[in-house]
Every structure is written in C-alpha cells, then in structure tokens.
Length: 65
Ligand SMILES: [Zn+2]
Figure 1: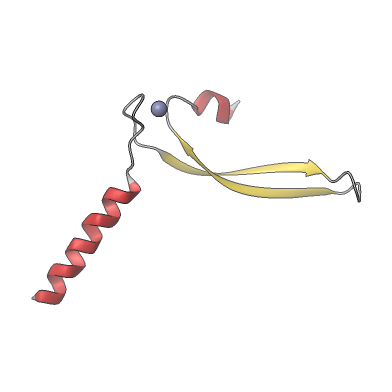
Figure 2 (figure 1 turned 90 degrees about the horizontal axis):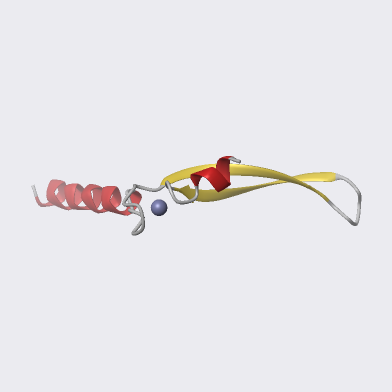
C-alpha cells in the first residue's frame, strides 16, 4: 500500500504543477507549441524554431495574432 500511496502523491503533485494559474486573470495556463519561421541572414534559408508558450487570457491575443 505504501507504494500506491506515493504514486498517488506524485500524480497529485504533477497535476498541481501542470495547472499553474496566472496571477493576473486566474486562468490556467495552456501550454502550446509555437512554430516560428525565420530567414537566416547568413545562409538565406528558412529555418523553423519551436518554442513552448504558456497561454492565458492576458496574452492569448498576442500569441494567436
Ligand atoms: Zn493571465
């Protein structure tokens, strides 16, 4: 039973970590993957970079614009 308990504890902690709230609007951040393309000034070829963004009501308009 001790093992099960610790597993439940971990799961509960993980859930807490996932749903971090924005202190401004109180929304839970939605982690999204943003892909941006930029042209390299050196080679002149396009490259794509991915980055994870935490989206809430405060910045969703900026992010999705
Ligand atoms: Zn917010």
